[in-house]
Amino acid sequence: MSITTTSMPFWKEYPERDSEWVRQYPTKHVAVTEDEVFTPRQMGVYMHIPFCNRLCFSCPYIKFQTERDLTLAYLDALKAEITNYASRPYIQDHVITLGYIGGGTPTSLTAQQLDDLLGHLHSSFTFAPDADFSIETTPIDITERKAKVLLDRGVRRISLGVQTFVEEELKNIGRPSDPEMLKASIRLLQSAGFENINIDLMHGINGQTMEGWEHSLDVAIELGVTCVSFYTYMEFAQVSTKRRKLPPVPDRELVDEMFFFAAEKLTQNGFLGYYGDCFAKPGFQPKYGETSWSDDVPIIPLGPTATGHLRDHWYFNEPDLGKYVQIVREGRLPISMGRHIPKDEAIRRTMVLGIKAGRLNRERFMRLHGVNFLEMFADEIADLVEKGLVTADADGIEVTGPKGWYYLDNISKAFYSPEFRRYPQHLGADITGFISPQRSLPLEIVNSGPQGGCHDH
Ligand code: SF4
Image (tube, rainbow, N blue to C red):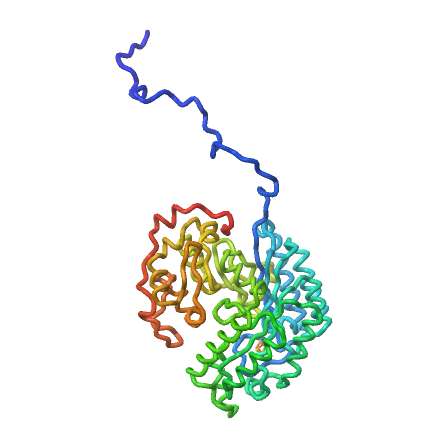
């Protein structure tokens, strides 16, 4: 029996069938090299050494007196944690370009221990030839031998906790009180071959005067250090300093004056401002913070309390030293708390950290997130420009010094999502009204952006 039809099927009303079978997209190609396809993505490391050879009474951080057996057990655990990360394919797909070794005092380890630990790090991960590593030290722990080990193992930047070059102020914060010894340790690092030396200075110390602060800055400049970071003396340390019958801390106005004085003096002497209270000679900016923040570089956290950023999560490690060692011995990663970062928060995070780094580049941001932050945050940026806190042009925005550096944390909060704003703040500052009202990002813009080649997935 034959079937007859009385009309054409409905789809015959459409144009002729496409004769090209779609098998690839995009449909036009250019030359591509092996190097382009397999260029490893950059990654950083933060490694924590929670020991000090001498405990300062004014220090609020979690640290332990160096003790041989505890240190050995800890170093074994730390190496096991490194090995655990290194065994993961995701990590193997990256090359280490930067790192930071903090504490405590990392150089409380012996030269041999430092060499062994850094050797394990190098043999476990793939390092870029020009990887930029930074380490913290103190004048009482650094020796010529340790400096040589660090340089041989690729540490390029060293940060020395000086705090002040005034003898009386050193006594008031419980530091070894010989300014000449501090100067000698800087010269030791210079003659060992460190070209990038940061020193930390503190303002707001008990008994500190503007003259004393100026003296410390002058000595730093004369000694030729390449970076000066300054911090306000921690208020909660005052409980113990009161018991010690120390002179009072300078009042808030004077501490603020010290900030502006230092910013002006350092910029007049050829330093550029980073992070608000970190000033570096051109070419010597602290890359760990600057690059990891502005390029959203994933960071492997190693050691208790260490904070990292991997696979769209930021998280920190178990803070309890004993538990940390136990977890690592069991073959697990000591990840404790953190947060998944969805796309819209990743955009805000780069804004917040970029402000903390002092500047944000439009093209760099576009490569990372596929959006133009100058358009996305046009209202917030216009408000900050009007307040004289940032300058903006077609290339991006830059925090205006010294006013913007002073208000750096306020500025960064202009880009927080409403969920993470805090009124009032836990230390009492009232920032209500300082920055314009918050709004949510338009989700259709956030989700339509391409996945940037550098973004960590
Ligand atoms: S050396 Fe640094 S980390 Fe150690 S106790 Fe003193 S201030 Fe704290």
